[in-house]
Image 1: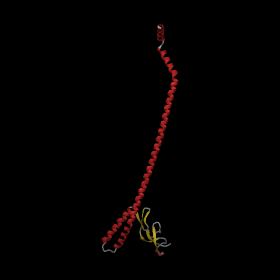
Image 2: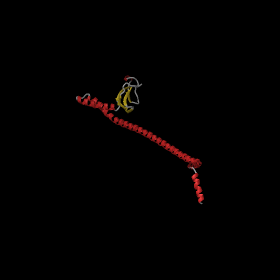
Image 3: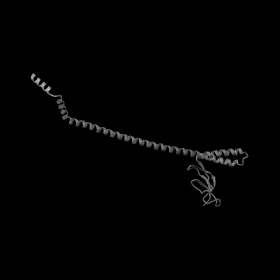
Image 4: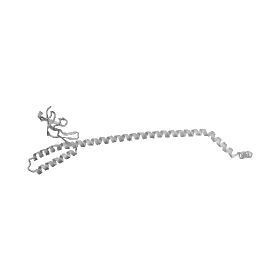
Length: 199
């Protein structure tokens, strides 16, 4: 038994440390290809998983971006429609209010005619001043009178209530205005009441 131990010890002493390292390296090299393949497979699987996760994240990003753009476009359309509706409602309200003031304007014209014969010039001047101020307010809002004496009759602007005679002017023209009409931009507040020369 002791001889076996001695012989083993002698064999170990006889071995060169470089030989031991070389054997270990050779043993590692024989195991390495399989271990390397496993590590590569694991790395490939991990890369594949990361690529799939990146693709999913990019798809979600694209989806959220499209959704945000749609919401922004919808909101812009809503705001534009809302502005148009508000403008139309304001214009309709202004037209309706202006139409209620037209009889007042007519009465001021009648008062001015009646004040011509008045002995009090201050009365006439005061009525004319209020009439001018009201007319200027109308003009500021874009309200203009329809008073087209001598022009071709237009049924879109005027109502013919009387027929004149050929001596009153050119055939088909307005020869007299009984009541002025008014328009606000393209919309008619009140048609003018006119007398038309027959054609």
